[in-house]
Image (cartoon, rainbow, N blue to C red):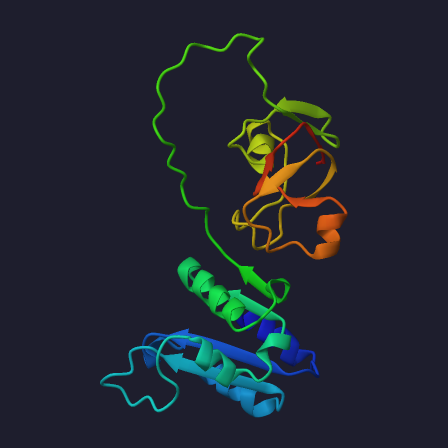
Length: 223
């Protein structure tokens, strides 16, 4: 978030910037001096920090966790803003729900996550006899640039299928938020649990997130 703020201020971005920061205690406010300096230097920047555990401190600013009321107070006309959220997963999910509850359109909310995806715990299933060739009905994915066609299971993402077959697809958060794994789907149908990193025009033109896309049919992927 500081990287984004530094870029906007260094390039003298003309529009309003609201930097909302929630912490437990005042000592958790990282970049405190720099934030104060940038706010003083740039009239279009508003820094709003709330402390959820202000007891036994000399904090005199906003207190409490982010809420619908505090977001509306911190950012005028918030329903018309483009919003970028970054932080721990539960905080981002909670903040997104708050924003939706006060009328912010979902397409104006962008989320950025770091770290590996949560581990999937597969339920135990009774042992089954090995399937015969006649009963196997698994879709396949063709990676056109790599000139490979491989099977893909129902619980496997396009990214996982690529990695299992030494096909390189850029990726970072693996949670559907950063957009590093965007690839073009030339044919087929997928389902994605999270697609926050995709713009509407990308969705209509066949761009998918490899870390989220699971095959519903045979696929042809430009990778």
